[in-house]
Image 1 (cartoon, one colour):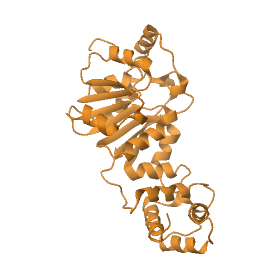
Image 2 (cartoon, one colour):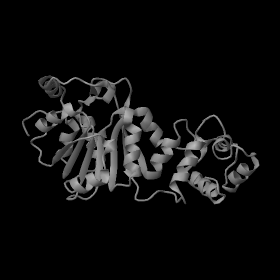
Image 3 (tube, helix red, strand yellow):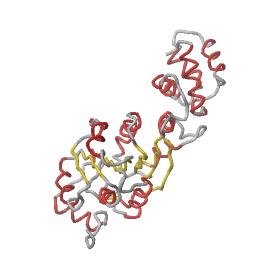
Image 4 (cartoon, one colour):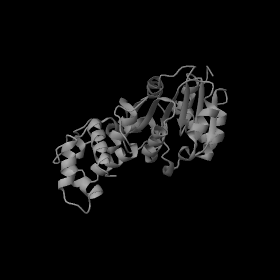
Length: 294
């Protein structure tokens, strides 16, 4: 292991790709990171040690996996592309604490995976350079399944990272911001230039850490209803919350009842969805539910 160039070095990355005749699939969003400083920032943000585990999604040829193996007690790398499995098995053979799984993470029973792969460690962090086209479905699966996670540290499209970390009132704040902040505390770690990837993506990237909450910051009577209200409030961003909620929950009624319920929740009907905080959405959801609106 010592004396061998890191997988993440541009030269070694190109050697591995050439030796295996690997060709990138645009449909899988494959962009391999070739900058050890960015990798170090990702691993540092995950707060790993030998008593913790790391789940990596989309390991590519193992540049990040190698760093995780040197830091965490147990590492599982889930890769959807069958062509990468023998490459990963070869380059990661020096690390007995790494398990490689060929699977689509969206179809994996994560509770079962955790019980099989991370039984010997305490908390687990997800650490990944995520394919941009499936960023949101993967992150919401990780958060909604209430896994024993400490952190989720991921490289994603910069625009999406900014939306996740946005505060009420800004153009980036929306239903994704609320969902992510309900389950976690987001923090932007760093921005990443497109020049540190092979091949180079067309968009800017960022590393974000989601510190997974032990419990949400607000109490709601019905989580599903809460998220329905949030989603409905952003159906058309330029419209008021009153107009958006009427279309979803009061299609055949007048506006008076809805506006009375909004005022009962402490919300002016003329406000727009992006101005409401998590606490206001929680209060509104509970008021609507108590009135039999679902």
